[in-house]
Length: 296
Ligand code: PEP
Ligand code: MG
Image 1 (cartoon, rainbow, N blue to C red):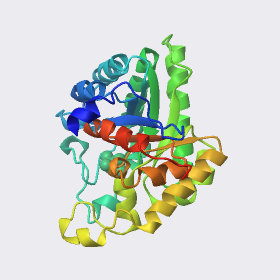
Image 2: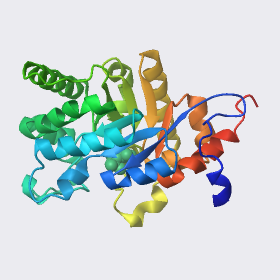
Image 3: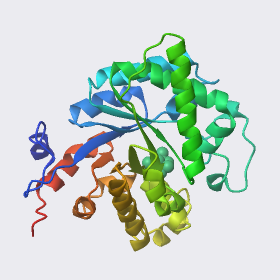
């Protein structure tokens, strides 16, 4: 089977009746790019930028970040690269942030909440991202969004950073797409409003499942209550897809559910535009797509 999958390299992600979908890869480090290229992913749908912070003993500098982002963009040679801004907190802890111990870290001070309240950290990352934007096809996405105002604030910060860079004579690409993760029920429920503000959505099914089913993703003892195919989750994804398309945004899925080939047909029928999976699953999902006939 593995040998057979290799023959799918260079082939399109297209169903028997001609419906196409993008299959991208998720990575957590610049070192994973080899695997992305080897498995013929169409782009990077989720670059977890946390590694830059996790592997450092202090805040990574703008220069350090710029070089990492530039390297990923150049290696992907014009293919889409979606870099997610800092998603620290909850299951991803870093000492030098000096975060307080929390009773419920998953419901606590994390991700976009840190970025919006500690703008110096967020701004450094955004400067590095926009500086790198001229080296490829960049998308930037924000994690753990729950409200319109968070998105507005994040976008305003992007505007400020871009203006600042231009004033300093630094070129910034005009075609950077800005998007958000849909990984809270709140974001899915107000996805009509959110879609008007951004270019794309990416559904984070790991957190969306945790928050929708009230199931701690770190606790193996409650696995039997954590039905990843729960109708509530599928409805939230479908609703987000409809709202995205009605309001001019595209939608992908980058949580683990994206690689679940028992759902590939369901996602295609919902009109999902992109599935982003671990590099080793790209060809498996391509195979699934190519065996589906939506006209039946
Ligand atoms: C998710 O929540 O589904 C996701 C892709 O992000 P992470 O697993 O990094 O929280
Ligand atoms: Mg998440």
